[in-house]
Length: 277
Image (cartoon, rainbow, N blue to C red; front, side, top):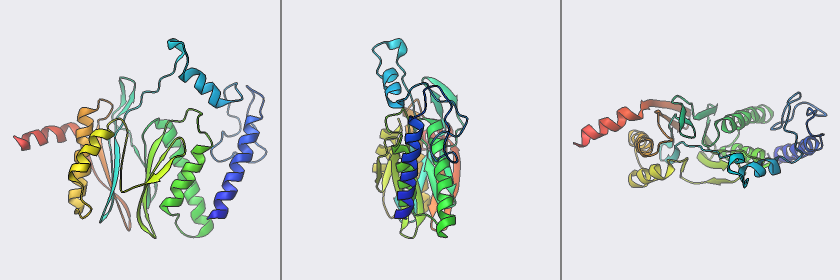
């Protein structure tokens, strides 16, 4: 595994150097096949040799008209308990105050034993986690065993770290089940990677944390854990304008993940009001 990471990092560094050495405004050409995590052959890139400086210029411009502001919003959560890992997400995609979609699939099904979540830029999360799925499959074919959750999250962290400061927007959770049992990791666009028993990511995460902190127990039953995940997303979606749609709930078990339910948050909220009256 260590040899795999070293070779991957060397390949990424060499091809990133080749990419940066191109003449501004020309087509990127690689000395070999299109590299992992870098543009493929024939893709036009911005006429600037330093993408980080280019993004910085517009994000922190003194002119308000030239400033690019990325407004993202979502609520995703995951937590471990005695029966595995629960992953729950909303399905709303926003572009500022405009609701672009209510049916976004924010759980990326990497393989039957790995799941990833989306928070931040939808394109970035979707692209990098699908790329991770390819790398996990390659690892499995080379080593004749499934990749661990820790190794999968490390690969994702290494890939996005190569683009730190270049405008990526990604806050994702990677969860799964391997030889060491259930695993849950957080990885962001700066390459930060950490593990814990509970995470919530997105603009509605503070509301979700409040619900989870109140109702969480490690020895919960599967039904109680699923209800806690649904309830946390429902309350976050009610208070956070950037979250909404439906609650997609997954349960990661020893024999793989299962999609438990898809529930409309508005129906859940008004049903809970009736039950409390």
